[in-house]
Image (cartoon, rainbow, N blue to C red; front, side):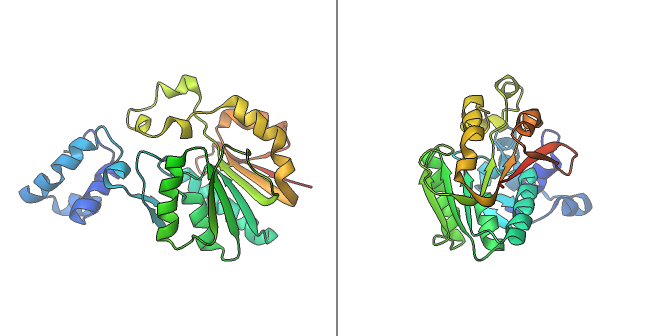
Length: 249
């Protein structure tokens, strides 16, 4: 029944449709009625991410509305948020800029965890901002997370204590090898743009306050490039060079 799906996908469907877990399935199995209930979802999940099927994604301790307008939040990005929270609390940062907010996973997590910060967040996609707005309203954070449509640092006028960005890091030559389900996600949120990133690296310091920092989630292929700009490289829980950190001085 689950040969073509991962345990995660099957568990997701069980929980959403039957309010059962994968462990329940292993212990008790499913009756005929339950099998019929989940059958159409199992078929759909062969070609579409389960998060899009149910318009729901789990990220840290929050539940987000998602659809094909935004990238599905990844587990690795939870560690990016953990790093950001530690720095913000230690440095007593007040104003944050998130580039490419997408569903709002990062900004919402930060705002819920730290009460006295304000976050300004952009996205090049107006459709993505529509989704972020839904999630921000759901968590009643309209007065602390402010959205605007812009590409990376364009339209930025102020300085920020922290700039945080989950950089699109799938290279063009890698894209064709992604699964069809991953390709359901917006390509603009996945594909790395070297010209855009080079421009960011040349200019981001102008928008950092004194003692501010820039925190990025990256492809390991970008590590050497970032080291040239004095970024510290941090490995994720899988021992992959996944995050980079720069402190202004």
